[in-house]
Image (cartoon, one colour):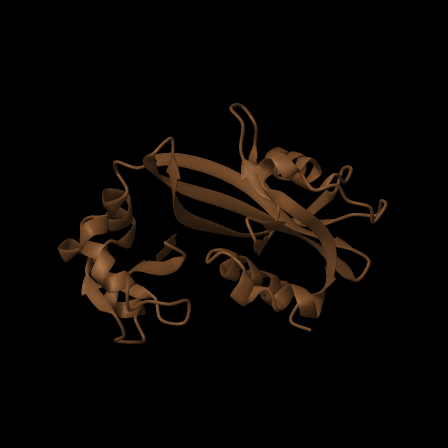
Length: 203
């Protein structure tokens, strides 16, 4: 199964045997580009994804995005005592992340981007959370971004400095309850990260 967010709405490439719902189901071979997908996205939501059924979801996923520029990124949820670090970017709550530089691994990029975007020093990765995919524009061309997500801990000062040149207006520490409540005020793919967070921290 492959889930990708297009216009903040989830599209799932999936085998028929994995499917447990009949909402917004189409055969992947009949939906080969974004124009085919647009009418289906109008009916979709976070709670009601578009399901594209394929014998080989991985092959269908790769075929659909074959002409998209591929971008890899990394980021994570940082915990300091009982609080978690979030940012506000372009008016929506977000989790710090950024592109992986050439020659850089995902974990190094994760730590570097969090330090740059939030102004904290050397958070420590504890474990991986998940991967997400979403579509975006890059130099006016369609791009597919894959983001590697991690959990991190931090014991330094609670002071933060948002990276304003990246359209970040806030970097703040939130309680677990408030973190989970950003769902309706965040980007589509962040919901997947919050679900993965709940798997590790159910209470």
